[in-house]
Length: 124
Image (tube, rainbow, N blue to C red; front, top):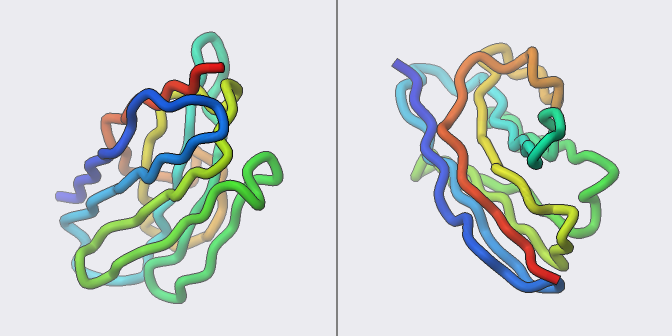
């Protein structure tokens, strides 16, 4: 059974940084994509960034390019989202998810497995 577990959320002041982690377990092959998504109160879910476990290729939304960096430690089956220069608009619950077909997109309907989410709050 594929499972994902996020950690690293919290409260930070505007301009600060946080690093989220997503521990992945249960895959028996390496061809999958891990994506990060977020959902702010009263808003729909937004794709943030993704990385291919197999190739290491990444893709990020324009809204976070230059501020958020996605990376992975394959030996630890963990994907990271380094978030820099945070602003109150980044406040949301952040989820990691797995696409078992390794499509390297941030369309949430491409993702089959989801973590429980971690809250990120940015104060002004």
